[in-house]
Amino acid sequence: MEYQSLTNCEEVVMKIVWDAEKELDLSGVTQRVNETYHKEWKPQTVSTFLARLVKKGYLKHYRQGRVFFYQILVSQTDYLENMAKQFLQFWKQENVDIFLEALKKQADFK
Image (cartoon, rainbow, N blue to C red; front, side, top):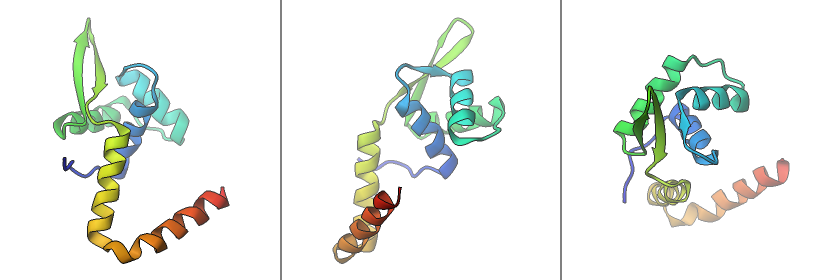
């Protein structure tokens, strides 16, 4: 399945949701984004990204009392597989070794 591409900010929010052990609400996502990625995003900013992720089909939300919680519709594995597929289609097969070597260098660097 092809997924709509995500902006860097949308990926940051999705990574927070993927890494969470439970479904998060807006305040939970905002707090984790700011702590994990050293951001100073306001709830309205995070709310905008969450709304875009719902519209793009990555998340769905439901209301519990006065609070909206977000559920994952696209797993991190599915997203990464889709990214890899798009990379290979764009760069062609001959660049896989170059990419893997670059990836290995980055992994060794850290």
